[in-house]
Length: 405
Image (cartoon, rainbow, N blue to C red; front, side, top):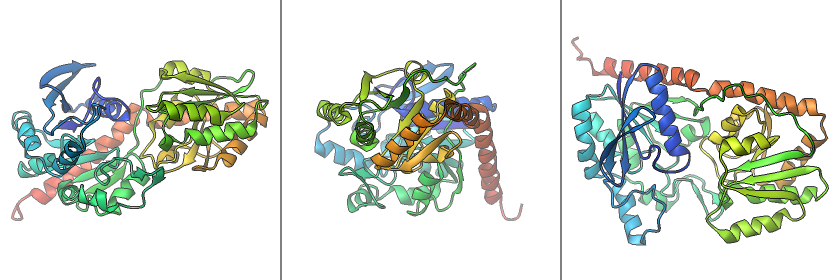
């Protein structure tokens, strides 16, 4: 198939899991023999090559490109969000790609900036559309369903007002898949994608060749990897560490940075007398091999949490908060443990049990984590995506045939 992959950000532009997820998706589609054209957004129009993939960059059709994390005036933010409900500039900037590439399928991922107008463009050209859900942007203008240090229940009035065009246009989507049951159902229950085939297909990772689980020597090394912000729940880990005390024989390694120096300073205080090192921003290949176990203490309802399966690929078991879809990848007692989000005492109890358990148990968890990571490797996930695309296009063609055919 000829697939037009339209995404808000693609490496090397942008930060976080969104650009990486788009790149992995492009790799997966190409591995199945599909011809893929990537269209993304940047500051200037260009055609580039990234790791052998041709990337067509279009200048942002909105008043700015929101993957540039710079302060914006409030009135510009309001205009940006209003235009995301249907932006004719996005429509006309994407139309040449539809005409020249003539795709069999249009796939959208991280729809911000490229805009829901893409769906109307495909519909008017009789091309089926498949959307990949990686965030809550269609439902929440903040993208996280999280405000005032708490998770939202459904959509607030502000999110409904600034998302008025997204739900109706989602009716034009023929297939949709989320990376977890949680994120998919969150959209379906709010009335999005009512005409689409739906599926759960996990995010993917590149397997790490010749990886062997680490054997523990000395203190239990508990790691955290990610941004240091309140919604990530690092304070919960800090409270658990403080309750375990200075002589727990557990060492905490915190890999990541935060935008607020005050919050990071408060975290350091909350850890108290615990044995903790703040590593700053770290490459996964540098940080993960130091960990015996990874803690993912998220407070917000993460759509997927690639970090969990990334840790698995290094042979590291995960202790994960039950919040959103992030814990769906963890099999309790097999490759890690889960705890109630925000419950520092329950987290501390799990870490204490891991410390006091015999090393063969922890090592078995590590071996199982590495084994489980194979389910998220590019090849098996690409196969699932391929089957879903075939199902969606077959159904689309069947419904598009003239009744007298």
